[in-house]
Image (cartoon, rainbow, N blue to C red):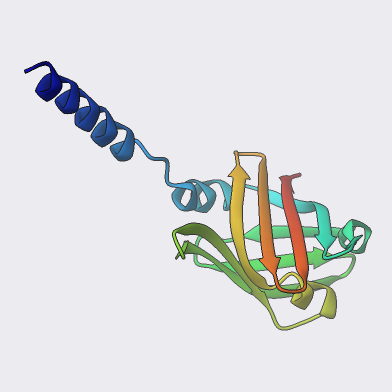
Length: 135
């Protein structure tokens, strides 16, 4: 009888914990469309490339478009969130310029809040890290 109660408690606790799992993709979708963002860190396989994005401001619209202002130039791309291989993902795509094409990828959402989103991509060529911070 004690074993039945114990197993019932364990199963109930597991069910409660599973139903309370946070959905990072929903939070990222809600947070990213609020305000302008900058790249505060970008590590590409073997070196820091953050300075290449110092003058860029990213505006993520709720329709899936992203606008990047850089000096007097403006570029557009797309973004979305989803789940792939049981990992929450942030997808971002640009067709130009080269610096933005470089960050086009399916990024794993490592952590996020209303003011910072930390992403990573572990490819065969090395690890990439990308951090967006609210301006």
